[in-house]
Image (cartoon, rainbow, N blue to C red; front, top):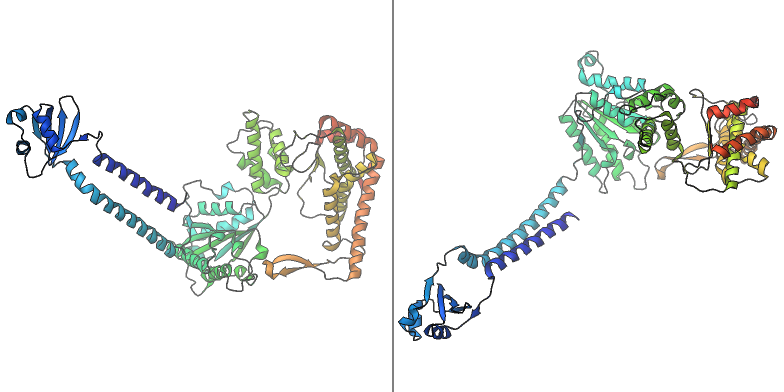
Length: 613
């Protein structure tokens, strides 16, 4: 219910209570009968009246039989004189208990005042509420340009650089900023100026916001934080007004830090919209540029910002004097992943068999947020199974859950589909184990997870930042392992290979057009990216080659695919006995771990071959 609805409900409740008050004061509990003064005189003369209570001009009569009645007399005349005027003898009147009550009490005044005063009070209350609502609307209009800034409290959930694993160089950059704020004199004495802005760039989950919280915990200066989306409204000029209010607040508290999360919400390339150069987002960006490095440069305010889309930011925002430092956050390597797992393992009882290094080896490409989610999922899994400790198996299962989704063990499949899936995954695993340059197989499973009917988990032995042509061709051949296995065993193929074929085609196309690995076309790239202005600097590909070259590109892509396909087919047909063995064990126990899989391979003395580039 909205604010107006609540206020309206309050007024209705007040009016109902007012009606109850009126009924209490003005309505007697028992309504007596009415008798004329002449009839009352006759009753008195006939000794039928027990008592008469006089209240102003009202006579409350109680008869000898217990019944009650009311009557009226003249206001100026007393009860004795009235009865005498109606012929009642003094003797008969003496038998009646006559009493006079004082009518100056609360009930008397309530009967006079309430019918007049309470309606007036009700009208006053209604008008007061109307004017209060109007005043509130006016106040909102005046505060519309104020930003909803939040001041970080270091005493609540404090984070320091010790709580951030890895990112050594990144932390050094930010430690300098913190050191400048703590002791600026040593920097100023040598002529160094305070950094104007720090831009944190990295993939989602790499720890940009966590690092900002660490800076807030380490520095002893006011730390203001907000999201860039809070600047933008449907009314032009509001965002710029809120930027001015933000920097004025930070300057009053200087030295201080402002942290703007997801700055790409307002910092995109200007002139990239259909609304011309004066739309709300661009005015907001213009105001940020002026505040950071305009004519007034005496501010001790450092602006930190975070984004995972640095490619769409305006060039003026990235120039020196604005965001002087651009700090890149990479995905953690194996050592950093182990340290991150240790941090997130705090407060979780781990079993003696837990080896976090093994988990770090199995999680290449995981960001810090993924690793935190992995540890949490493992703890949830252990609690669900009523365990007191988190085991290594819980952690391993959590890796697969984070990567592929939860296991769908309740999914019912036919024996034929199970056999097809087993041979499909066995084909991937066999080709991977047969080729030099392919990543080792860590697990093969036909348990459905997410959208996958089964999966073969291949992970590199060590961290790799470069990839060779031989390794690409090995990956291509492994992609075709499932398709070829189905074709050889069942003389037919299924839709289970659609994703493998899509990935293989894209990989082969990149080998030719992006990586310059085609011998025929040579070391050059094909296709250039261009900026689509109306989409806000989104990237698109445009041809920079002729139609004849396009045909050669297709030929080279097909050549890479054919070379990998033929190599995989040779392995599958030449080692069908190993393929059958792996598939039959998968059908029996559904999962093969790394040790079990390579024990099977070793028993057949399978030797690896190199796929020539």
